[in-house]
Each structure stands twice: as C-alpha cells, then as structure tokens.
Amino acid sequence: MKFRTTGSTFLGLMRGLSLKNNALPVHLELAADGTLSLTAREPFYWLRRLAAVEAIEPGSVNIDRYLLANLTRFGKDTITVSATAERIEVTADGLSLGASNFAPSDLPAAPQMPSEMVAAKASEFSKALKKILYATDHDKDAVRPALLGVYFDSRDGKLALVTTDGVRLAVAPTSIPWETPVLVWADTLTMFRPGDETITLGITKSPSGEPETFHIGNGREALWIHIIRAEFVNYRRILDDPIEAQAKVTLSADECLLKLSRILLSPPATRQSVGHLRGRAHHGDPSCFLTVSEADASGVTFSVERRDEYTARVRVGAAVSGKARLCVNARYLLDLLRVHKGEELTLSIRTPYAPILVETTEAKHLLLPLRTYEDDRLAA
Image 1 (cartoon, rainbow, N blue to C red):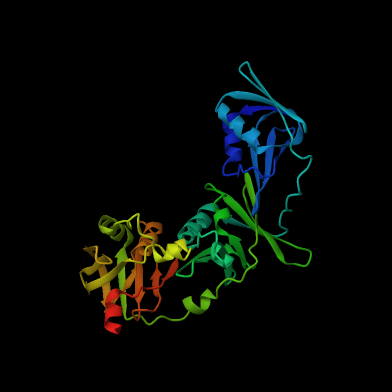
Image 2: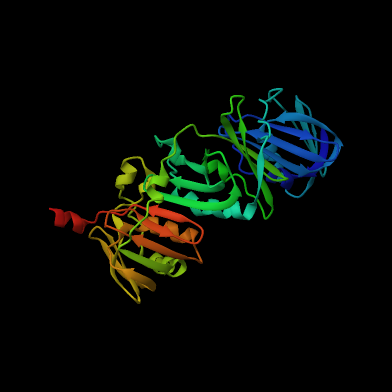
C-alpha cells in the first residue's frame, strides 16, 4: 500500500483513540479512488473513519497505533507512506523514516451494518444528547452498569434519550423513529461528533434476534457500540405519574446561572465529601446546598449554605405560583442550568422530600431534594 497525504489527515483519523500498550493495531485500507479507511477496535466499540488521500498503490495493512500517532507530528507537510505487513516507510521533504511493523496479520472482523437503519438530523440528536449526559454516573467503579449508559427508549414510536445516576434523571424526547429499547455506553457516544448533516442510527442483532451493537454513522465516520447487558430503571413509573405541585417556579436559566455562580464556593481541598468516601463521585459535596427561603410574585431568594462556614443569599427574578420549600445540592442545579442556557426552567415542587420535576420545552428532569441541618434539628 502506498499513498501521499499530510500529518493533519492522520490527526483527524486518530482523534480520541487509545494509545495504551495493549491496544490493538488499526487497520488501514486504501481504495483506488483515494479513500483511506481506518478501522479501530476499542474495548467497548468499533470505529471506522474515512479520509481522502492521493492513492498510488491500493491495498491494506495493520499498523501499530504509536507509528500512526507519530505521523500526526508532520502537521500540514506532505508525506509519502509505503506500508506492508512487515514494515512502514515514510518520506517527507528529504526526511526518511523506517520502522518495523510488528502488528498481527489480521484483526477480528468489524460488525456488519444493521439491516434496518433510521435517518435523523445530527443537530437534533446531538442537542438531545447534550441535555441528558450530565445525569450519567461517571464513576468507572460503579456497581450498577445501567447508570453508566444512555437508554434509547421508544415512546410512541419515537426515540427518547434517558440517563440517571441514581440521584438525578433526565429525559429528552426526539422526533426520530425508534422501536427497540437499548442501553448504550454514555462515554463512548461522545466519540462521535456529527456536523450539521443527516446521520443514521441502527442496531445490529445476533442470529437469535438479540441486540448486539448500536450503530451511528454519517458519510465520514461510523461507530458500533456494544450494548450494556443490564436492566435500566423503570423511569416511567416515576416520571409519568401526575405531579400535584404545591408550588411552581419558572425562571431564566441564564440569570440564575450567573447569580448562583457568583456566590458558590468550591469545597475545601482538604475535605473529603461523603460521596467521595463512598467511592461515588456523582454525589458531589453534600455539605453545600441551596434552599428557597422566600418566594413571591417578583421572584425567589436562593440561600446557599455550607456547614457553618459559608452562607450567601441572592435574588432571582421568577414567576411563582403556590408556596413550598425547596432544598437541593447546589452543584446539581448548576449542571441543569448549564445545559439549558438561553431557556426557561419550570420547577414543580411537592413535599420537601419528593422528587422535584424540572421541565423545559425540550427535556424533563427529576432531582432528589436534600435534608437540611435545620430539618435534623427539628426532628431531634
């Protein structure tokens, strides 16, 4: 196989791939029309990317990832690559490099394309995914793998993306046709970065009809992600129940985010939170919480407290109906505000310890409240 290209081309092909010592080589295949295909296998997914190069001699080869990563250092300089199963030669501007290629002669076959695929707008899918990823458990040692994934649910024949970390739950409905519910690794989904084009979604199945991999692709990139073999929580039982709110607060995400960011302090570096001691990073710092101490027609007053070290109050304009008390982890509310910049949020509050429903025009969220020190003192 022989072709000419630039180091920046390899940089795009290698984006996001692991360079661990035990990572399998990548497979390069060059077509006569100058299309270079890179296929890589990671623990949880297969990735295939295409690039345009100047083809001299079509062919295919398996190459060690470190060799390809070194080629990216040539930047925009033109390089000529000649590769066989045993050796790779690179020449550029009078510079000649040669290296033995100890990669195996073949790789496991990549998954087949799904027999049934649906077309979707990349912008709609990416926007829905962005709304719910914050609620995924990012603890790699989590004992419940379902919390590490995105649930692709079918609601009335349409795709709804759902995530939860056990404390928060986020649902983003779409207009994309979908039939088979599957659970997909959340971190792997972020590998695919579609532009403003049409993408395809599908599921490859075993001969017995069981889902095996989730497929997402466009004309330049394709991703096959292994399905998580776990049962997702019955979120419908919680979310679809009618909520009789004692109070509703509608506020601007931008204004609330700006004012709360100014008064929130990071936890002291020497303090280990309860969540950290339990090995569950998503709990954040439970000692920093936020309450609504006053609410009327002109807005709400948020109070931020952290043990007995720090207190702050800020007034946020809002439309308020009814009267109820709210107390949440301040960091969790900030996560919500960040993914809904430029929008309005409506918080439906019931009893002090019932889940809080947060609604926007494009998504629904559930947030578990906190028990405050004042509650403990009253209980005592």
